[in-house]
Length: 82
Image (cartoon, rainbow, N blue to C red):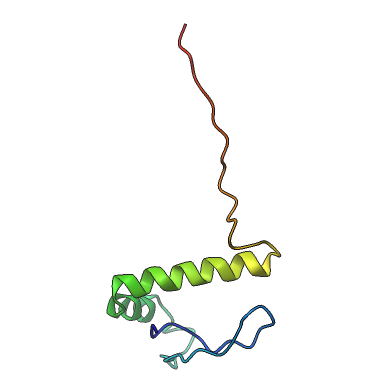
């Protein structure tokens, strides 16, 4: 279980998963990317990849698509030089 996993109550999800939540209180004047950079730098690469994949699948589901078929082009072409 990664620290980035969430407790999700959605119809497509099969059950709750524990999640560690990290937050920061700030003003709009102080808002920058430093917090995000520090957070993701503290997450091991395998967990970062797993979270990116999970978010990618979530976007596909929200768009009404099957995340098992991400829509990669499977067409093949042959270029023949004359």
